[in-house]
Length: 108
Image 1 (cartoon, rainbow, N blue to C red):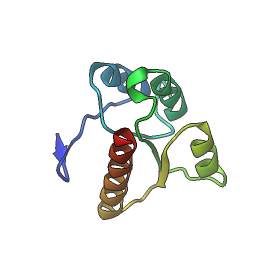
Image 2: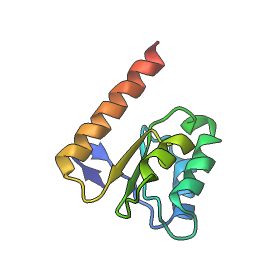
Image 3: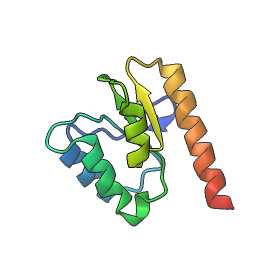
């Protein structure tokens, strides 16, 4: 699937996200914090322990934004935190910013 000029690979739950991430080398990952089977924090932990995703941008995107969720997500290893509802233009801008930062970091 393609969205806003990006190739998007979807997973229906956290376990599927882990499996798909192991098959590809994504430039950026967006995870819902509250997915079935394995939550976003579990997927994040798995990905951060994988060489391909150690330094890649991983974004927490969630509809159940509670006080402290953003700080907790960032402290656990997410690169960015976005609460729903989010406008597609804002999401695209954040993705582009993170990809640019990631690209700049790998060039230095």
